[in-house]
Length: 335
Ligand SMILES: NC(=O)c1ccc[n+]([C@@H]2O[C@H](COP(=O)([O-])OP(=O)(O)OC[C@H]3O[C@@H](n4cnc5c(N)ncnc54)[C@H](O)[C@@H]3O)[C@@H](O)[C@H]2O)c1
Picture 1 (cartoon, rainbow, N blue to C red):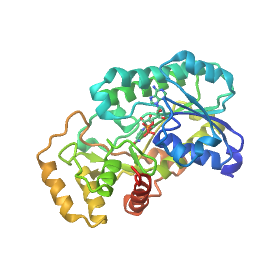
Picture 2: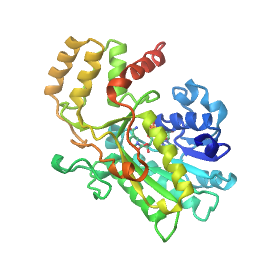
Picture 3: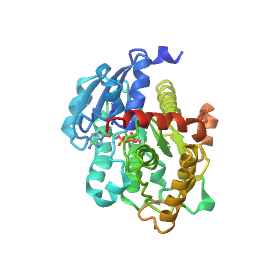
Picture 4: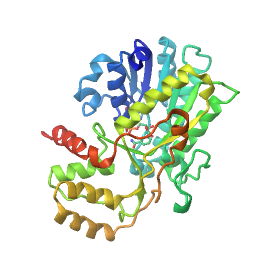
């Protein structure tokens, strides 16, 4: 049934050669959709190129902070469904250079949504916000719920909170765009190539037999959701919104609601690969570190998604760790 819905649907993905975008494009193509995508530049390390998905898509390279560039693409093709995933996502980069991050994540979002005004052909727009848009809440108030207000302070978090609010404005009765906003926890899995992120960094250091350099003291709490769950969820949300315009303006959290300390994730990885000695070494380094510029506790209440659509994550860390490790092993082979 899912295949019939997507067959020949004209879909635009901003951020198509990113981690989430390339996995989503792969699935949409399997389902028969006509996939178009925007990226900042051609990235040969992306899953999109590694798995030759790009050959089956129509790609545009350019900057979403450039209104003319976006407007031309939106005008040219009669898209029916749009996933807005493009963003500068690296927290460290954002801390060092907030301006560039805000240009992409905030200006890029209103450029896109503004260029869609009065485009009746677009029936569903999914905007990727993030758990980071909530900012920091005391642990006793977690998991985050959709009605929590933003307390974002750090640059990346603020950029996502602004983009999230802008999406609410465009979904409001003033502009009536068919937008659903997603606030997902940390996503992991094949195709994630930012080695500043915990899991790619861990996998690479194990594969290359290099020391893993922790960013903080390992006590930060995170919620890791698998990419396959997220791709399924994006497809579900877009389809439901397409069929039911009343979902316009809704916000959905997703994650696993299973908080994990960063040091426990490190332990799971190292123990799984029988590297207990190395783990002890990393823990010693971690103890001396201080985390700066990052939210200490994050995990998600996804009961709204469960109530609306019966969604819950299918995958867990233990069952996916091998698949993830194998993917990095293969993709780092000659690097
Ligand atoms: N990966 C996660 O853990 C996670 C968690 C929650 C939310 N998100 C959100 O999901 C979305 C996708 O994340 P990802 O992990 O795939 O990121 P990614 O960095 O892998 O991909 C980002 C994509 O955006 C494009 N892009 C960046 N700047 C651009 C610009 N100025 N103009 C045009 N394109 C530009 C890149 O070319 C790339 O295709 C982001 O909006 C992110 O905030 C990600």
